[in-house]
Image 1 (cartoon, rainbow, N blue to C red):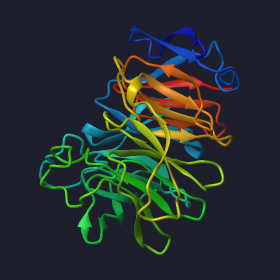
Image 2 (image 1 turned 90 degrees about the vertical axis):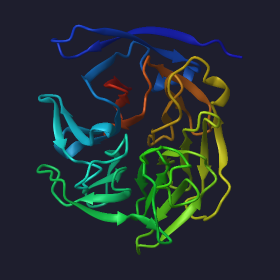
Image 3 (image 1 turned 120 degrees about the horizontal axis):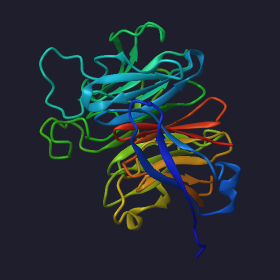
Length: 329
C-alpha cells in the first residue's frame, strides 16, 4: 500500500469581518495528483452561513456561482465583486401551505442546451426549468418531469444533460417528510435513475441503487457515474445511458472507509480528461477515469457537491454551512 502525503493547509475565510479559520489539507495518494492540484493550493471559504449548501453551478456568462440552500428553499449567487446574495426564493417548493419537508428547496442546478436554468426541486417533486433569464431570475417554473408511469417522483436530487439534450436525473427520498422509503408520500417503489428523452418519454435506467445521488458523464458520454449516499452502501456506480432496467457496475466502494469521517458519496463532476471530483467521506475524492484514487481534499464538515469553472481551473465545493474554492492546475 502506498503511503499518503498529507499537506496541511489553512482554510481562510475571505470575508474579513469573520476572522475564523478552520483546518483542511490535500491528501496526496498518487503522484498523478500533482497534475491536477498544486501541493500548496489554498482552500478558501468564499461564503458561509448556510443551513445546508448544495448544487453548485458556475455560470461563465454571468461570472457567478449559483448554489442551493436546500432547507431554506433558496438559491444564492456568489460573485467575486458582490460576494453572496439571494438569487431566487422560493427555489424548490412553491406551494401555498407550509411544506412538511425538512429539505423543500432546490438541490442540483444545471443549464439546459439553450442556457436556461434547470432545477432539481425537492418540494415540488419535479425537474423544472426557470421561466426567466439568468440575469433577471423569477420563481416561475415549467415542469420538465414530475411523474413516472403516473406516479409522482420523490425528490429529484441531481441531474446532467448529454450533448443531444436528453436529461438524466436521480430520485432519492431526501425531500420527503420522513426522508426514507417508508414515507407514506412516496409513490414509486424504487429510488431511481431516470432519463428524460428529447421526445418527452421518461425511462428508468435503474432502480437498483439504494440512494442514487450525484450524476455525471465521462467524456464521450458512453458511461454515467452515479453516487450512492447510502451509509451502508457508500459506493459509486457506472451506468450505460442507453439501457433500461440495468444492474449498475461498481466503480469504487467507500463503504469500509467511512469510520470517523463526515460525509457520503453525494454530488460529483468529471473534467474533460475524465478525472472525477466526488464528495465523499472526509471531503472531496479525486479519481482518475479508471477509479484510481489520486488524492483527497480533506474537509472538516460534510461536502455535498462540487462545480468546475469553464476552464476547469477552479473547483467550487458546497461544504455544509460553507462554500469553498480550490484553484486547480
